[in-house]
Length: 199
Ligand SMILES: Nc1nc2c(ncn2[C@@H]2O[C@H](COP(=O)(O)OP(=O)(O)O)[C@@H](O)[C@H]2O)c(=O)[nH]1
Ligand SMILES: [Mg+2]
Picture (cartoon, rainbow, N blue to C red):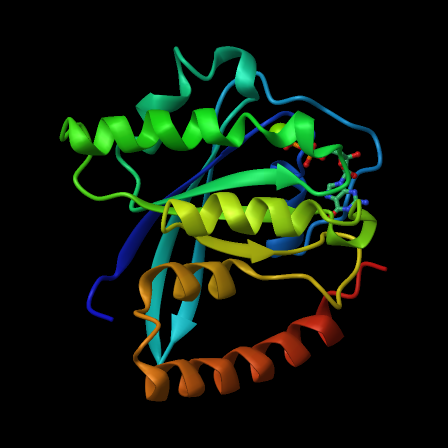
């Protein structure tokens, strides 16, 4: 990995768990009270890989209502776009991820974006409605988009910022690198779970 800085945008419906995921990554306590984000919120984090520090700039964007107007401003300058999906909601509710994907792809084709690594993040795995992940996987596969699942509540499913970053940027066929990363991630996860057990 050569770059030292990544910009990531989190998009998706209100209440899909974007803000909570950033907080959990930063080991902040999860607030039970729901607060909708009115505008995009910027957070900076550092992750370490192979003794190198990688700066990650995260844009947490507000819900779908103002998607058309505001959210593209953020994702257009991102290296990675995470589309959050709430696995605990009826799939019909999540169908508009297709709208997000089409819009982003259109922007990429129109060269409004340098690069666009889209990843669908299925959140609330702890409360998943059975069958949701299969439908979302199909949507992702059909469009050659990566899909990953996580939960902010159940640590068994929790995927960190590092997990998502590596999953987004590493070529799947590079098995040795993946094996190495997996080992580092396991080690990190264990350390983090000890340090940051929110449950
Ligand atoms: N069960 C469950 N609830 C979650 C999870 N992540 C977030 N929540 C809850 O979902 C609500 C909305 O979360 P929030 O992060 O504010 O969503 P955002 O609008 O996408 O930023 C809050 O009440 C969170 O506590 C999760 O993984 N599992
Ligand atoms: Mg939010």
